[in-house]
Image 1 (cartoon, one colour):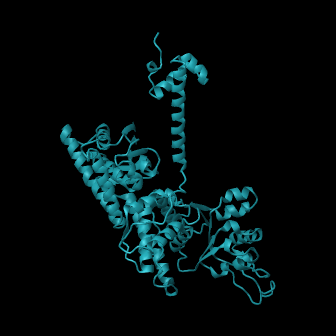
Image 2 (image 1 turned 90 degrees about the horizontal axis):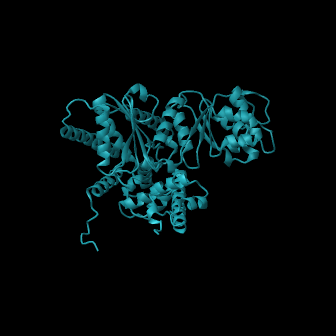
Image 3 (image 1 turned 180 degrees about the vertical axis):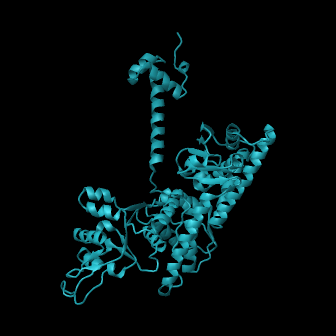
Length: 520
C-alpha cells in the first residue's frame, strides 16, 4: 500500500486539474468572461515562455523557424504533451500531437484549444510579424490527435480558417466574427422589439450561439447571402435551429421591415396545402365562402420560410416552382395572375437529393430552392457551443419560472458534454427545463438525463475497431508462436502470410521472438 496518499499529485496532474477547474468556473460567468480569460492567460504566458527560452539560450534577436519550433514543442511536451514537427518552410510550420497536456478531460473543454492557438500565434507574430493558427484536428474535439498549422505569411494563410495575430494581438478573425455576430443579434433584436407588443414579457428574444468553428462559418454565410435575393435551403437535423437561421437571414436583409412568415409544411394536411400557401377564390371548393389570401400574399415584400419543404405535395411543388421562376401565382380556383415579391427560404431534415433520385421531389424545384445551401451541424459536432447554450437557456428558464439558478455543477456539465443529443438544442432545452423545476438553490446539481443511449461517433468507432483488430492480431500471433515454438516459417504458413510479414508484425507489436523459441 502506498504510504503517500498524494503520490499521484504530480506537477502535470496539478496543472491539468487547476486549468480544468478554472475553465469550469469561468464558463459559469458567461461566454465573454471565459474567452477573455483564456486569451489573457495565453498571451501573458506566451510572453513569459518566450522570455524564459531566450534567457536559457542566450537569444536576443528574433527567433528563426527552427528556434520557434523548438520553443513551441518544448512548451507543450514539458507539460505532458506529445508534439512533434511535421513540416516547416518559410510560409508555414505544421506540428502534430498525440497526447494533450490537459489530459483526457480536455474533451469537456474544447475551448482550451484557443489557449494553444494564442500561445503559438502570439509568439510567432512577435518574431515573424504575422501569424495565423489553424487547428485542423483536435483531441478536444475527439479527432484522436491534434494537427496545428502556423502560417507566418499572410498570402499563404489566405483561404485557411484560423485566428490571425499581428505582433502581440490576436485580432482579425476574432474581431470580425464578434462584430458580425453582434450585427446579426442587433438586427434580430430590432425585429423582436417590433413584434414585442404581441408577445408576453417572459418570452425572450432569439439568439444564435456560435462559438464552434462550424457555426461561425454559418454566421459568415449569413452575412454574405442575407443582402441578396438568392433562395436558401437550410439542412439539418430536427432541433438544430433552422428557423432561427432563417430569421437571421431575414433580419440582415433589406426586407427586415417586411413580414417574416414561417410555415411548417408537414403540419398542413395535403388537401389544404395549396390553399394555405397560394390562397383560394370564393367557391373554389365546398366551404370556400370567401376569398382567402395565402401565405405568399401575406408575406409580400418579405420572406417566406418553408420548413419541412420535402413534405409538399406534387401539385404544390409545381405551383411553388412557378412562383420562384415567374414571380407570380394564381389562387386555387382563380383565373387572375397575381405578381408576388417574396424571398423563399426552405428547410428540411431529409436528404432532398436522395428524394429527387427516388422521384419523390421535383428535380427542377430542388435546384431552384437550393441556390445557396446551409448545413447546420448537429449539437454533438458543436461542443464549444454547449456551455454558452446552457447558460443562455438557464437565463431564460429563470425568467419563465422565477428561479435564481446561476450555474450547473461540473458533474452536470460533464453529463451534458457526454450525451449525443439526438434532439439537438430543442432536446437540451427540454432536459434543462425539466431539471430546473426541481432546483431550490443557485446551482443545478442533478440532470434528468440517461447516458446509456449514447452512440459512438464515426471517429470513435474507427478507433475502437482498429484497437480491437490490433489486440486480436497480437493475441493470434502470440498463440501461433507458442504453438510452433517460435518457428517463423510455420507461423507464416499458419497465418497465410509471408515470413517477412510476420517479422513486420513482431516489430509492430513489440514481441520478442526469443521468448517463444525452445533451446535444444
